[in-house]
Length: 451
Image 1 (cartoon, one colour):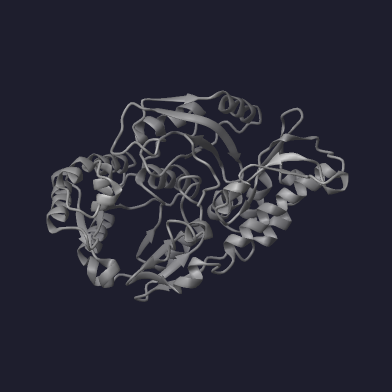
Image 2 (cartoon, rainbow, N blue to C red):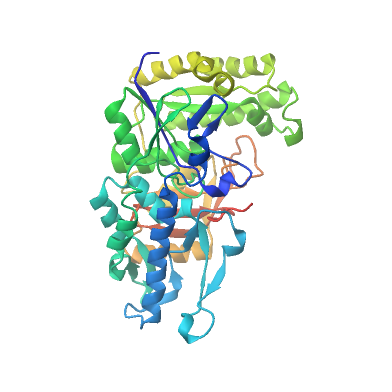
């Protein structure tokens, strides 16, 4: 179209690369190069996050071993170790075995690096000084009087920042057609905040007329977290949102069996429109003009594609089917023009779901009812205990990052379509004080995925 455009996306994690999802550098004629390097170790940024996180964990245990001057309660350690691989065997472990010379035994566990607070800090930091200060604020444990213990208390924030010095620099590559692509940072959207780095977006905005940035998974996770966390932190406001849909996904939400998704089924497709409409409603709530991008697959029939486009037209939502994978940029000219039109009209009025001053429970309830479609929120005893401890530490007023399944608008992956009136079950609250939010664990979500 003659515009200077840049794409800013996240770095792939080795967990999904070797799991069911595969790589995240695109495919066909719609990919970022060099695909193999990006999907594997790339520049080592994610390994640097792993090293910084585990340095802090090691120093914490060394402090306990050498007398525990900070009186850390080893049953209240908030910083798990991490690695960039799905490994369910490491979710819950016991460390410090082998006798007095080998450490102090305690329960511990691993999360995937994408879920580490260090990853969130890297993605939200505005520079090296901000990175170091955010690391210093991170709460690693509580002491025996239930007071927070931070990375600053362990005097390791400087060393962790040094490990992340190079990782803080955005990585510039390109698409197969030569469009600049900044690939930087990698938090998941179901268990973290799901966007690439603020530095990547700022760099792209400073050099381009159009920046296509990423907010992982659906509007319930990616878009809400971009508005409530990234926009709140950085002031970077989207001009429009691209809602990605596919015939197969809509048929799934309409009740079709997984093995039958490649078979034409207009009834299931139309039943699945409830899910599409819910996502369009979420974007409207967030104040973002939406364009629906229909990923066209070889198994999709013309009647199915026409049905989706017709439904979007009836809803007043611009939509276009594309074949980027097969045809590159030429396969999505209509979509590109629709997105450009939506982004340049100036219709966006970005609206966070909750206010800074709202109580914690109100913030969670507004996301659960206003975005997810829940009827109520319930907290189990462990979550209430977590919340009381965080409030006593002065952390109860932070924004919330809800960790839940990406497979449903609800916290139950088996509920398809647009379920209403269900109950969001909160079973834990974890501090991410350095990143600037509280992680709310909903449903049966885990921060170490599995193969």
